[in-house]
Image (cartoon, rainbow, N blue to C red; front, side):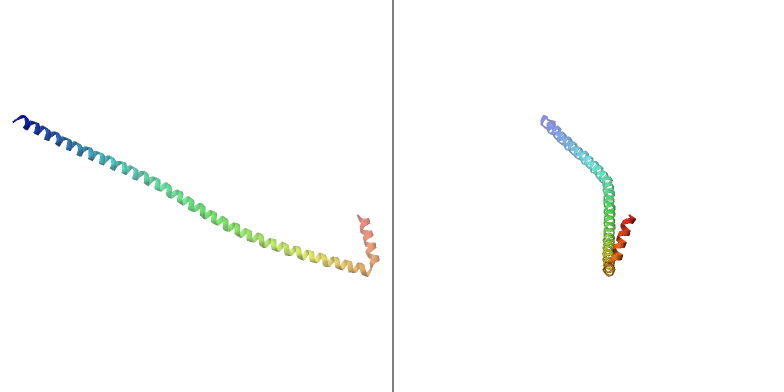
Length: 126
């Protein structure tokens, strides 16, 4: 064999070795990326569970807020009803007080002397 032939064979062997090395590096890189992707997926599953718990908590809290708001509205309506009832009673009492005073004034106009005597006795009793 000539030197040229030997050099060609050595060059072919080197090229083949480089190709084999490149394929091996590519496969190793691919496996490493697959492992990395799998780790990311597993971590995402864990995080998904955490996010779902947070979402459930948020929904539960929103439901409690809606219930509290509804309860507050019921209480506000009850307070308004009671206030209206109190206003009605106050108005009725004021009307009754006016009618009572009118009766006393009428009695005083019919018999002013007794009214003066009662006023004096009332002042003495104090």
